[in-house]
Image (tube, rainbow, N blue to C red; front, side, top):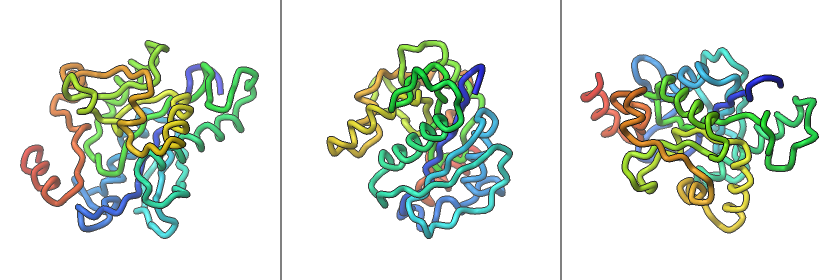
Length: 230
């Protein structure tokens, strides 16, 4: 890999979908499944995608994807999103190690200027906007002091969106430590990272309706979004 670091999109496709009442991967928006909408937005800015299932028997819908796509299964079933993120980041790290010829400055957590950047999202965000994703990536590239760039609706990082964010691969090191200490939430993981919190005003420049931050987890969410956005 030469030149600018590649960008890998990781999509969490598991979960029980209990609030939706059916597999969210199969629910449609605008005539396409949620998952198709998500991968279409990601492939505009990513060189490859990693889809994480929480169960080997889970069946993903047929997808029209124009970049290499890898489907993985979380080895710890239904243990929360942080566990699934670990699976994705470890896979990206291992894939990068296998495909790079310049590993002299590499350590186990992927600390290298050529290491891939990661966009992290879930299967319940069919309204992702590629313009906003590019903005998050550009912001991460512009300041090497940050491990992640994360949208934050209010001044409090508690009101943030770790599943619509850009990360450096080295953030895996903190995630492994966090999980080893019994942590499970993504926001808890972020507390150990150097995060560039992006304000709502900055986000609206690239996504005026903040569609990228809308998570559709229930029939009510879906109904409200359709009424508001059409």
